[in-house]
Image: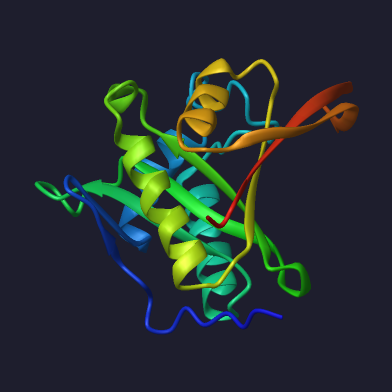
Length: 183
């Protein structure tokens, strides 16, 4: 079984990006990401409405990181490390199965620039080589062609399709499940 320890917090770097801890001053950007209709289009959760909603979200993330239950990074450009432009995480760990789940969001102004692919590849490397995961999965809306293309471009394979397995706002929704194995 894997053992998780996110202390000290593992900041990660790529050619263009800094993946760092989310802090309370990121609340305005978190509010934007969690309330923007384009960002939230395929995320079946109620959007954030206030800065307090964003602050509560950051507190939950901190609790998960501090208790070694999940890890979420702020995605920032190295040229402006204080500005959060997205988030990426590994959560829903199945420790006994060496498996975790990834999730991510990115500000629409940075879509189609390879930023999320760069971040995801770094997080996969961390998950496989530092956390010793055997597999990482992603659950997406089957309608989210951009996310499906991102996952497939980084080596994920669609391994399941669950019909109407998720209830949100009075509707039953489908889920596509992708995974990648440690090479």
